[in-house]
Image (cartoon, rainbow, N blue to C red):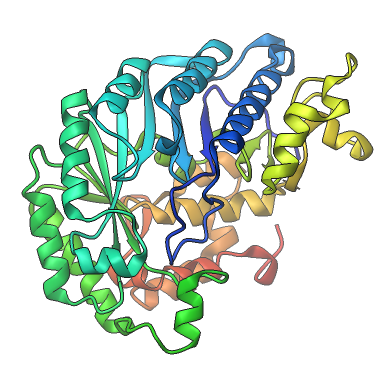
Length: 422
């Protein structure tokens, strides 16, 4: 099964650098010196140029790009000129909408008003700042490079640079965190002038390979138990919703009209191109991701003899089927590649749709797959409705609050291979 290109496609740019690795972080990121960063920027630009070959798009028609997202790592570890140059190249090579949402992630301590002003003039119009907590002791335990005063300085700098569409990241379930702590965090965030337009709210997860995992295994992390963590989670959601925010996705709240367009595109199945180490792409029913090795990525996109051959096919999707031996020359080195089956696409429709608080449109399922949703998931839907985890109303299926708490359990039942075949 091979899907046609959609009319719209998002773009993600991965900047894998940070000042210092946080103790909980398992993202593909690490500190690097200026030379390594500059080589990466050069490689990244080469990848963008070669994967924007207009010949790969049907009849030369490139999809419209409604959103661009610079994530990491900490993109603002790079200079404003480098970030602006990458964005300028994206706009030059792709069909970016005039009013596209263009997001830059930023951590306190990695930018000031001058840098943010340059980025704003370059076209970045949404900024996402990693606050995580307003408690300095919590920030120290996380291994963050900033305190709350540092955050307030960058919040003021973002405002004065002209950023009006703003997001703040917050983590719940931190070591030693209590209901009182999270209430203080909510109060401090709601006292900001202006208030953030968007809140991303994540529960702490102890990931393999992190410093927190070592501390956890040694019994040195005083984490809230599961029931307390859920109380903390819902306490801060209630505080924000009472202040006018709306939870529109499991981990995201926004003031009306400020839902993140880029992430909403992922959750509704829009195609996307990712550039940079480990960046994932999804086009024509194929999902793939760039190599996670910084050395391999930089070497291929700048130094590879194959890359510099005149006959090198400089595109991402020209005749990839059945040319396994040449895949590296077509795609660049990959960490994964998967052609999605109809079952996979149905599963993703359910996984991603149920992340949204408005849930799944059952008629859209039928329109997309030619099957009534009950033909495929009837028994599973009945099971979780009976448990009070799923709610069906007005042609939509969505998770209850209890269902959100047990989302992984519900989602695991949507895997078709262990249930039925289609």
